[in-house]
Every structure is written in structure tokens, then in C-alpha cells.
Image (cartoon, rainbow over all chains, first blue to last red; front, side):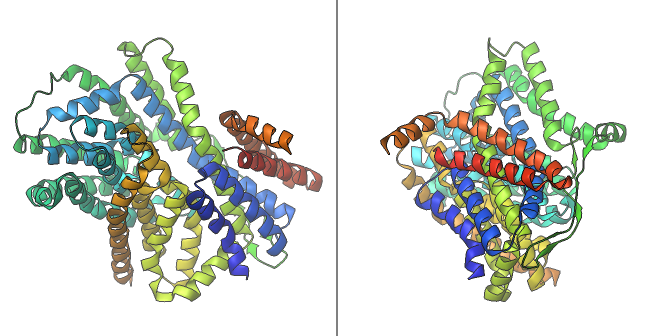
Length: 509
Length: 63
């Protein structure tokens, strides 16, 4: 009975989002209210415990939201300057081979956009470009949807990975290696799937080696950056390496002659400036010790007492999430956004009213997800402090036993599908997966890598993302066609992560 | 009953504004909860917990 009660808030969110197609904000609020009621009525959570749980939830939410707000601000700054359009228009100049176009635009460039933007941006930007190049609307949505999935965890400048660290209290040193390994390896398979979606098995065979080369380059790039401590740049740098490899490759697969107009190199270089600034600012803060120390002087650090439910579940006393507010990844992204804005403004790329459009566009896009993150994080933290997560973990451990690592990515995938986001899935299920793995004696880092990789790959077929892609490709109301096509590809990818998790557990002993 | 549904209909036309208010309420009440708990103020804790919960009810009401 207590297991079912602990599971109920998660089941209700799932039902509301998938069954009734509610948005994440509304479903998150329902989940919070239910978790609050169950925690107080059945798990003995008093008002003091709930009060401190909400404060801890606030710290975790701010930790994640700073990155989301800043990542989207940067995207708006770049997009308002016309830079995204310029980069998108330059890519068809590389090749007229439809398979290579699908790979470069729908896989490599989609991953690049995920690295710096996310939130459905890759599909929204690329689907219309592919339709313009002659792909059918369904394929034009399926290709970038599939193509960017492997870059979701370390994309959006690392917001999903930050959420995983915040929810579990573990560091990037522990979590990054397996996460980057699983996602990099699945990224290679994603490349062959994109080729398959673009032209069937013939295209897969013809472009086998280019996919292998691009996949290894991007996966390795992401892995090396993620494990070196600059995890927020991992997907960005990985896809940038991919773009670097794609240029010479495209020359070998040029396809039939076709007029794509003139390529304006100066405009392209200027468009890329915003992202060059981003790299410089992040690297400067990370690797110049005096600057790092200077920005790290102001820290929000709250201490919490031991908390105990009426049923005797204890949360030990300790510090909450520490926030070095001026050195936080989100704040660093704000600095990069201001520098990028200054450069584009000096270059005369903005029209009158640009600041208002940038600020309004950012606020409109982030508000709903901000509300959903605060509600869902509050739900997750209340569940954790009331002992509900512990009850779920023990129940799952008893029920699944040795099979748990194989199921872990499917739990992550379920969370991403129902909440539309890898970040939300990590918030809701991160601690649960961690506790279950601890109880069963499995490697926590392998299980959590499986959680986030499964969530990243399945987030691409969340109804919220598919709706965005379908509307920009001019096929609103036909989202079912896209979801049917994505279902098989995504299922294979999550199954692959199950296999990786099994091997990882075996290697870890 | 019809007055209630009319009010809900009008509320749902302002989803963004409601989200802004609800978000501000959540942040405000959660931030003050730490102070209330530290000062052992049960009434303050209750009031702020209810405020946080009301903000969620507000979000629940709009689409």
C-alpha cells in the first residue's frame, strides 16, 4: 500500500501528460499537490520538514533554472541577429547529396543547436530547412528529432547534467565518464539511423564510413570535454568537432550539381562569433585561477538541521546546494550573452526594438518550464524527505533485483517522455535510481548514466517536442505520423543503453 | 456554477501572466520559509507553505 501511495504522484503526472496531454507546468503542479498530501497524511511529514524541503527545492531549482534562462537568452541574442538563419543557409553549400545533407544538417548541426540552445530549437530550426531541400515533412521532422537526442544531456549548455548532479548530490567527476560514453556510443548509431530515415538501407551502406568518422569524432569530442571538467561545453564542442570533420567529408560526397546561390563567408564568420565568445568566456572562467577565485567570492550556502518524519525516516543534517552565484554556469552564460549582443550590435545586425524582442522572447519561452521545474523539483524533494523515494527504491529493488540496471534507462526514458525533458526526468527519477542502485549494490554511476542517456534519447519523442517540430514543418495535426516513425528508432536506442548498462555493471564488478 | 466557469475561462486567457505570478509566489514563499523555520515560527511556516501551495493551485487552473 505504501509503495503504491509513494508511486501515485509519478503515475498521476504520467497519466496527465500522456493520457490527457496536459502541459508539464500543470501536471507538475498536480504532482506537487498530491505528493504534499500523501507525505503529510501517510508518511508523517510535518510542517517543519516540508518547510525545509521546499527551501532545499528552491536552491536546486535556481541551480538548474539559471542555466535554462541564460542558455535561452544566448539563443535569442544570436537568433535575433539572424545568425542561426545564416549558419543554416550556409550548410547546403557543402553538398547536394541528400544523405550527406541529412547527416550534416539533421545530425551534426542539430547537435550543435542542442549544444547551445535546446528546448526543441534543433527540430524547430532544421525541419523547415530540410523541407526546403526537398525532404518530405515527416522525414524532415524525424531526422533532426533523432539527430540531436544523443546531445541532450550535455546540451543546452549542460542543464540536464546539472539537474542530475543537483538531484543526486554527486559531482561531474563521478557522473560524466559513463554518461558521455553511453551517449557518444549511441550517437554513432543515431548517425546510421538518420541515414536510414533519409534514404533507407542503401544510404546507410553508402554513407557507412562518413557516419563512422563523424560519430567517433563527435562522441570522442564530447567525452574528452565532459571528463575534463568543462561538461557544460561537451555537446557544443563535440558537435563543433563534427562540423569541422563534415566540411572535408562533404567535398567527397558532393552529389549532383545544383545552384544554392552565393555563400557569404563574412556573414557566416560573424554569425559564428556569438558562439566563439561563449567558448572564450567559459574557458576563461574555468582556466584563469584568479578570475575563477574572484567570481567565486559570493556563495549562497544554507545549513539544514536533521529532519525526521513521524514514522521515523531521518534526513541527516547538512548544507544544501551551494551556489557560487557569479561563477555559476548560468551566470557565465549571461556574461557570454552580453558580449555576443555587444558584438552583433557593433556589426549592425540588430533592428530597432531588438532588446525588447530578445527579453520578451526569452521570458515567454522559459516561464512555463520554470514553473514546471519548481513544482517538479519540490515534488521530488518532498518525496525524498518524507521517505517516499526510499520506499519506492526498496520496492523496486525487491521487485527487479538483478534486472534493475537493464530497466534503469527505461525509467529515465519514461520520465523524459512524460515530462518532455531530460532535465525533468533527472530531477524526478535521479535520486530514486541512485537509492535503488545503492540498495541493490550496483554501481551508482553506471545506473545514473543509464538514467540520463535513456532520458536524453527518449526526450526526442515527447509530445511537446514533436508538436513544435510538426508545426514548423507545416504538418500540425499529423504529429502521430512522426511519433510512429520515431517509436522504433527510439526503442532501439534505449534498448542499446540497457545493453551498455549491463556491460558497465559487469565491468565495474 | 456558470460564473465559476466564466472566471476560469477568463483566467485561462492569461496563462503567461498567471505563470509569472505563480512563479514569483513560489520563489518568494520558499525563500521566506527558511527564515520562518530558523525562527521556529510555526504560524509563518504554515502561512508560507499555504502560499506556495496556492501558487501551484493557480498553475493547475490554467492550461
